[in-house]
Image (cartoon, rainbow, N blue to C red; front, side, top):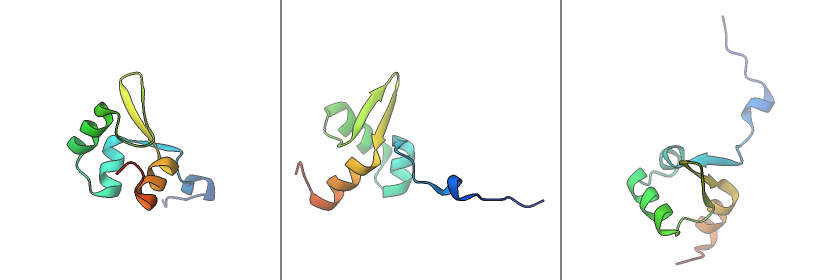
Length: 68
């Protein structure tokens, strides 16, 4: 049995969780949660009990350094 990967499965998600963002960036979860709770994590929103980060906004922050 082989795993079939379809093109629609390879789409970049609109937003990710803080643990996923930590894995993608190498920034610790603790640092990301701290910044989220301070309101200083670009693209970050709380939905229920979870934080989600809009990747395009976060990537723009990384590219331009806005907010520094």
